Length: 297
Image (cartoon, rainbow, N blue to C red):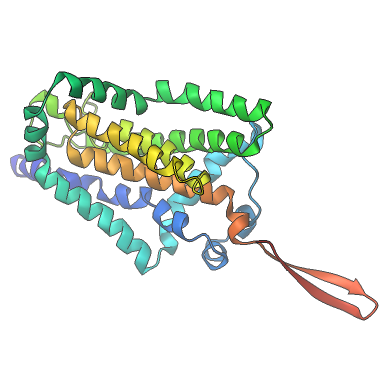
């Protein structure tokens, strides 16, 4: 029992690696949503003709379930590049895990009143209680100004926030890692248990910030200001969690990765028709029967 406990505390991060790889299903789906990938998992109809997510209806609500399910099963069809990307995220998380204690010491040695002010802003940007109202206002803006892109962006951001938050919370429940301010070692992991409060790994604030930032960055990728501002604010949230001694560095990196890939994946799911815009249909003319191909740019 003592041997197992020691092993758990020293290598507890690997409790969550299987779930980590699964939850990074967005690596595959976000980067490649082409026909061959879709056909292999047998959901070509769902993804080639996605419902427009620019209004709140039953189709939009049902998308929370279908999109989550699609993300969770997509690792079955990953190729070498997909596994490489997931491996890089796992490797970066593990590397930061080894440096967590040193990074915390540096952050706590550099506290200041101005840093506290900036950290308060960053923490607010990752709090769903502060994120949801602006998304609602952005949706209303799109509604009254007849801007379907604004409506879609706000609804997809809300879906990304909800799904990524659920995934992150699932990992938290399994890992049960104490927060740094508790004074416990960065190598302490309680594993699945009934104990409440040890929810450091991964960072929910970082997940929330990047889940929304990635949606806005994808939807407004042609605007030179939106992506850097969105990701910059999300990064501020991550640093604020380390600065405030609420999370270890590996916590915020993994949380941000989950939010980033979930957001990108959801946008691609709902714009898949742009990537698979080839339609082949039968035609009838004086010359007889035939096939016509249409490609939308």
